Image 1 (cartoon, rainbow, N blue to C red):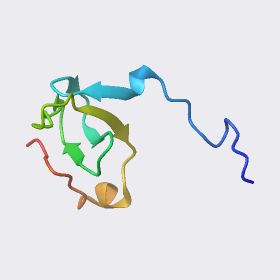
Image 2: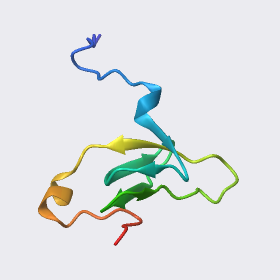
Image 3: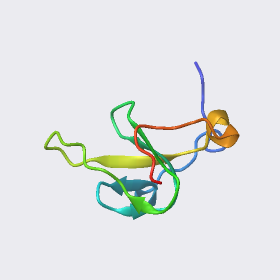
Length: 78
């Protein structure tokens, strides 16, 4: 059985979640419960899900593609 310690898992707080319409810093955000990523090049608002549900996002760390300049999510602000 695999035992995980707090050193392996970061603590998640409500400050780690963002909702659609909220202005956020540049970066990559994942829609909770889906594979949809949104990449923002500058401070902008997160998009709605358009399915009648509240869209909740979590910030994701940069990928190698992001660092190389090729990683783009569904939407990028320009």
